[in-house]
Amino acid sequence: MNVQPVAHNTLQGGTLALVEPDETTWDAFVDAHPQGSLLQRSGWGELKGGFGWRARRLAVLGPDGALRAGALLLLRARYGLSIAYTPRGPLFAGEPATDDLLLAGLARVARQARAVLLRLEPNLTETAPAADALHSWLLLQGLQPAETIQPRSSIHVDLSLPEERLLAACSKGHRADIRRAERGGVVVRVGDADDLATFHGLMRDTGARARFAVHSEAYYRTAWRLFQPRSRLLLAELAGQVVAAHLVFADAQAGRYLYSGADERGLRAGANHLLAWHALRWARTQGCLWYDLWGIPDALGRAAAAPDAAARTALEAAAQNDPLIGVYRFKKGFGGQVVRYLPAYDRVLIAPLYQLALKRLAA
Image 1 (cartoon, rainbow, N blue to C red):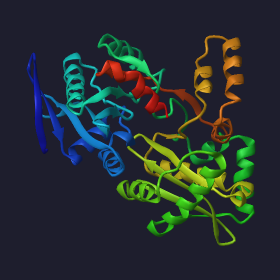
Image 2: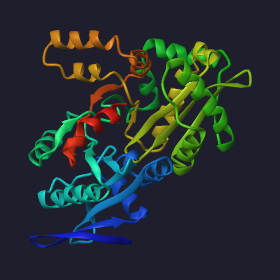
Image 3: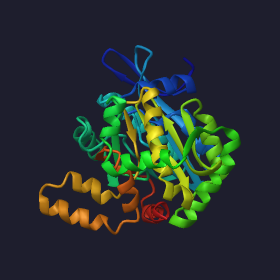
Image 4: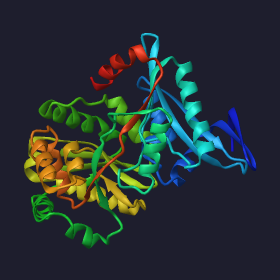
């Protein structure tokens, strides 16, 4: 293990050290942690490091020489100030001395970077056993709830089911669309680096049609490369032409549906349904426990936990006006469960500039 000491804390039975672990040590810790995520692996830091962010890995080393807690911290500077952010993290230990040292270390690094705020975004759903305790602890540390940067509500598909039951859990309409795409001549193949320009073209056209921003071709190319072999570019072809594509990922816990695009022919042919089915099957072969379909209207995540039928009905009605409602209908057809993550938590470091920083983050 190659680590660089940063700070220490003493507890009964030994000393805790705040360290900066090497990539191999850090990724092994992330993969073993129950809240580990693709967005906490070193590759995500390297990806973001090439596009405007600076990444640091901070971890708490126990007396036994094992990492106990840690975080991939992203820093983005502008006009001499910055924001500090842990995407789907930190990965806490649930031990006060350990977590105190980690939180203090993150705040110290953020202050050194002249960060206006330190934003934490725990990778825990609201119904997870440790969620209430972590929420209370963070509030007691003086952090305040904030809007998440990653989607707060999502759909998780259970991948422990046999393949035939996984298909049966899809809606009748989705099963029909998958079969219709196959009968209509849609063929799915695995893409490589030479196909990323085509993928980016589909993303660009889809973004223009649906009015969302897309990354550069270099960004998608880097993401695909950094996470090989646990990234997969799936292409749907009709009459020899690529009409839809998904770029998906797998970490130790879950498959992640992050990027997709399709043209009008692909949409009419049901190519996205067939691609998503292939992605689910691929994630199962990677040993993933579930497949994260990513963002849906947050009102639907709130509705899933609503205290009564009236509140649930009102939230579901509100969601109909969300730009993501069509995306939700597509994702829900794969039979998963709606989940909602804990909020983000902000440690305010430069109070007079905090509201301005929030506006810039929202933009």
